[in-house]
Length: 326
Ligand SMILES: [Zn+2]
Image 1 (spheres, rainbow, N blue to C red):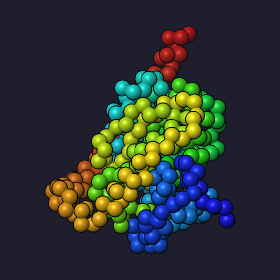
Image 2: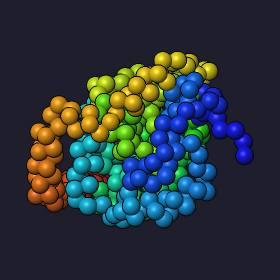
Image 3: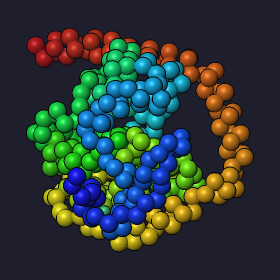
Image 4: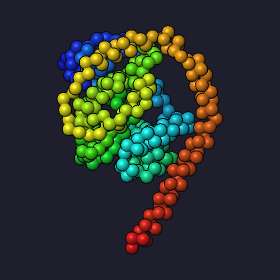
């Protein structure tokens, strides 16, 4: 077998930082001693991943074939958050394309706000829901089947990058889909967020784990330049907007390894439970969970109606515009 190379910096020196996943099953996690990128010790092949997603993942992690109302409500609110934080950084008519669009809520929120928006989603259940209930332009598809024609204006990658066996290959591919003045927005878990529990850190499906620094290094070595980082440093999710530029060699942040080790070594269960507001945030979670159950059904009914009304309005508009043009 070929020697393992870091996907970010091509380094070959690693240190083991974990040997179990969050369910207690064997899973080796390592950190690159050159750049600090955290990844599985054994990177799964494309075939292994395909097998995993076709069987286990569906049942355990993303169990539902059709999303529950609670899941749709959360995804919709998340889409609204993403739109409102990107709004002032993008052109009002930018065409939006989401890779791994899930239920399609984010795509739809951009569409309702005047953007041409579309996406691809490999999961049949979510993609069908997206098209049939939310009337989105989300089709079943894979990133690496998309045309590399530099035609995309804004590509979204929300909680997807951690699932690739080579995030470098994915980002280089996305760069080749984007126009030279295009933009790229990515969100993924932040392994440097304080109070992450070490025993809960690792998951088979999350092949690479990013800190703010490693995500920035990787994207900047794939032809992007960081335009804006959203959220505070303690945010459990990284949220970064990049613009396109010429590809350059990775600029290695030598402190990322030490800094990441410090965070990981600090992530003990005791610290997690003793963190400020642990109890009040638990209580807030239980309360919001109950509230979600009560409100999700009505919320989703309203969303579905809004999507249908929007589609009807678009249809009404078309003949009127055609009449005006004639
Ligand atoms: Zn590395």
